[in-house]
Image 1 (cartoon, rainbow, N blue to C red):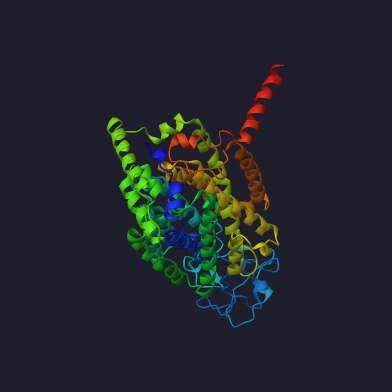
Image 2 (image 1 turned 90 degrees about the horizontal axis):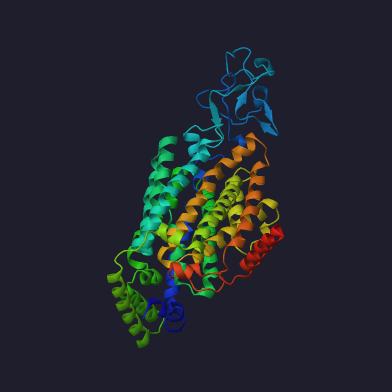
Length: 520
């Protein structure tokens, strides 16, 4: 006997059935996914400005320096250069003479309109954000660097969380990361400076990231092969719903400290996942813990109104004995890196998947971050940009921007499913974390894209997006087809995926013919 004799998909379909247990798992995972989406872009509403007119120079010659009355007074263009249909928010005309009384009308003779100088002090249109409290006017870089700091924390955290999930289980990793995200995120509301806010944001993602990934993998490993794509789309859609809810909450509660509390405090309840979330049966079986796997299968069958057959229970018992005998003969196993180099198809995937993830992350985050800078209501812009991720909202595809966002969101959803299907259960989270880790290079660069376009060529970011998408699309031809395939549990099974792929056969044929022609 071996673990290959246990067909878990058959047991889940024929003996456990579909019912309350699967609904429970899916609901638990979708809640985590929604909360992950809820906090993903929170800094866009707490720290960044909505448009260029959020601040202007304080004009002491014309207004009360302690409490300016109006953000856009009628005399503003006499003291500040025009910028498009509005006025410059970073520069002013230098004074020719000092106005002895602010009650005197502010006239153009007070200023030299042939020159402009940087603002010394600022007046803010909105005073309910950290952008105002930390005095970030005319700083196009620092507000977005918070996003990069969060992603940096995520990059450091990914391999650690992947190891935890593959070593000690999906449930532990899920509950731990979700709870850590809640309490560390809550702490950001007490930040009293830009530096402390950025540091706390980094710690938030260092300790609390990967809750979405853990929830995604747990749901996928309980899904039947024919429903894996549906499951993956459901989880991703719930994350998009969370992002929409973020936009609505930020709209109703614009003060940034209250917004943070509304987002993170409810997530402290994720501590109960230690007790109510089931462990992944596939992961338990990959670790040789068949007794625990059988216990969960029995509970699942009972919850669904069915039962596990005597033959299945006997098969689990016999397989457990075989695993124990193998462990006595082979007390240790090679390092994961060594296993990757031993299995060349896995090595190729490790080289190809990072490019996919970098491209998807760069475009997905880059386009979403740009949404709040579009003219108009920043809350509606953000909601529209994230709503396009939900399948069926085709009416939002009226602009090229939203079409691009929709396409890259489909790619991001497919990447999670596809990457999870290509790697074995025993190391699935580690491989997914590795791919996501590489992808975070794009996430770190994404917040800098608006500044890059502003300081070079406004269309340069979109040119970068297009070239990277083209290259990534071509690299897909090197990967195996996984549609309808059983999730691989071992490195050997994963290596066999796509061996009969027609695409790969065509590529091999083209390479062979090119060699023949070059020789002749």
